[in-house]
Structure formats: structure tokens, C-alpha cells
Length: 141
Figure 1: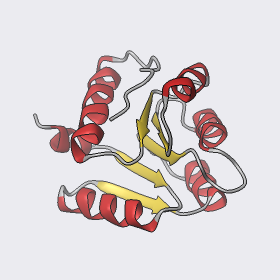
Figure 2: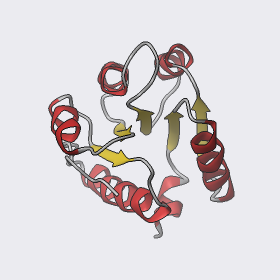
Figure 3: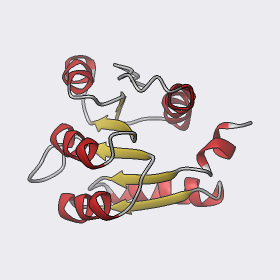
Figure 4: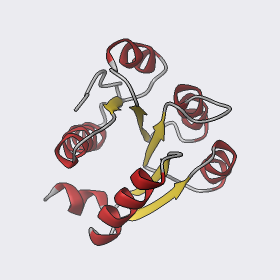
């Protein structure tokens, strides 16, 4: 089974202020026939997490008002089984350690390639289906 076949069975949420990232990933996941929604602010993202089931939650670290680590940590309270991925606009070395301690499963550094995104998702989808559920640390692209 390919990565995108696995992802079709999962609900994915993206929270990012960058319209290019939102639009690009929306196009990618829609073409792959995945259930994908995106928001550009923390309030709408948190409302969605509180009211809907998501299997994968991806959030930019640089969100206004609440940083991505805080959002993903809070989202984990509502969706503890969800794979949570942080996107950082700067080298993710230290931030990946902080994110892992917060229960976040992986970090992706901007700008990222499709290969980097597929690598982190592929590794985490495999982990989640095996029931590992442990933070993956630094998966920078």
C-alpha cells in the first residue's frame, strides 16, 4: 500500500498562516483523494480539533498568538492518538527536542520538499499503524 493510499483513510488538518503552503498542500492532498482541511488561525484550528476527529495534525510553529508547539500540545489533549507534526521556519534542531518533549511526533523545516514531507508522513503513518505512538524527534528536510 502506498503512502497516499494509507493517507486516504485518515483525516488531516493543516494550520499555517502561509497561503502558499496551505494552497499547495491542499492541491496535493485533494489530488490524492485525502480528507484534508486547512485553517490560517489558531482559533478556527482549535475549534476544528475540539469538534472533529483528525488522525494527523500539522501546524506551523510561527502562528500568531499561540506558537505551534502550544497548539499541538493542546490538540493532543483532544486528539491523543493523532500524529502531530510541527513545521518550523528555521533550523529545527533545538525546537525538535522541545517538540518531542511536548509529545509532538516530528518536525519539518521550511522550506520543505515533497520528498521531506512524504518521508516524515511515511515514517509516522507506519509508526502509528504499529501502535508505537512515540515522538519521532527531528525529521527535518
